[in-house]
Length: 198
Image (cartoon, rainbow, N blue to C red; front, side):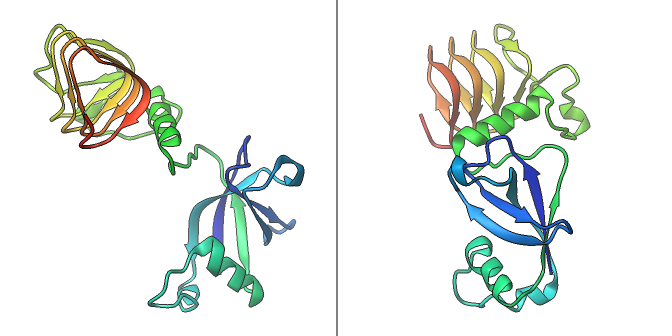
């Protein structure tokens, strides 16, 4: 009825862990436990394949959370949920720290992204045309079209989205800027600054 993608995580405490039997059938969910109660490192990724019949269990006009409401209901009804450990890269982006980590992993090449041909990261740098010659870029970094980078700025290992502005003589490292306005002579490191922030 439901197939759930699971991921073997070295630090499972912040996530819901999932215990399966030898056939992959989910037998227990343990939400955000302590190390003393950890019996598996498999975490629920929040990625599911769902049979259409399962949708009939969801009330049409009420909040209904999969992990908190649907899966316990399915357990009561003895409906199968199968967990499948997945290989490859997975990162929860539910907070700014993990979002930053995921973005930096992407530009560091820890996961495969397939950019448009014009955005090729083979050099470790993608920049729009008309970037001032005095801007210093330390790869890997992505500066999207529509971002404004002023003279003598230093950009390193960062993603700068369309609509963002980095003022003259500012230094931006390990950073994601999504439409924010960074003033002149600012030093920004290891953070995410969102649209509308100054």
